[in-house]
Length: 241
Image (cartoon, rainbow, N blue to C red; front, side, top):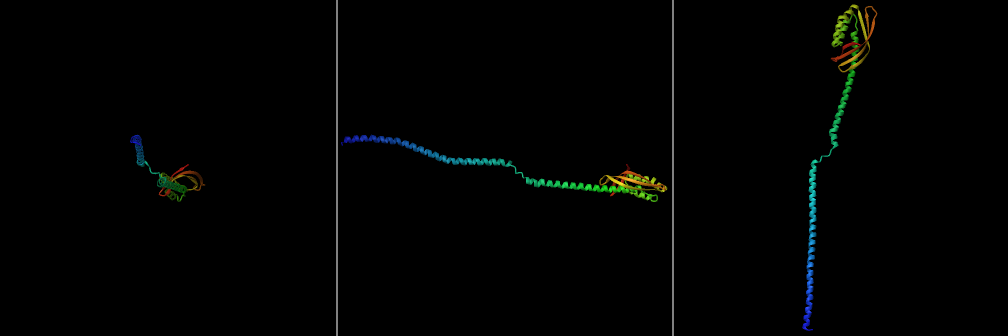
């Protein structure tokens, strides 16, 4: 081969080399761009990967702060639980005990009062019977002593009127005319009574003998009022019915 042929061959091969180099030069920017995109994507992924935990921590901290604030706001307004057992033990139960004690005391007082009133009534009835017999019974020889002693069983206005009647009429008349009188009480009933005052109804039969005359009998009913004076039942009123 001649030198001229070698030059043509070289000339032919150089443009191919240039073309290859040109194509590679075109490819290199694409490679650089793809590498840049890969780097950008990886950086974005790293940034996103690093940002997500930070964001989650921020959200958690914010949620905790809100929860703490809500607790602080709610805690003062919260009321302690209503303990019925303590209320019952310290309030209801003592009140019930007090009520029961008061009720028992009232019942005892009422029962005692009723029993005392019953006892007083019975004593008053017995006193009314005995005193009625005493003030209406006498004999000519002992009339003054009997009727004077009977005054000690009386009180109030009735004592004064009985003293005047017996002193002026009954005692002198019994002595002069030999008058004797005997009284008995077949029945007596209690009308009302308390510890200091009583009213009774007394049925009286009286037999009166004047000298040698045959005796005469009278029956009457008397409303007898008694007052308790110094522990004794005394007749305060003696009203025929």
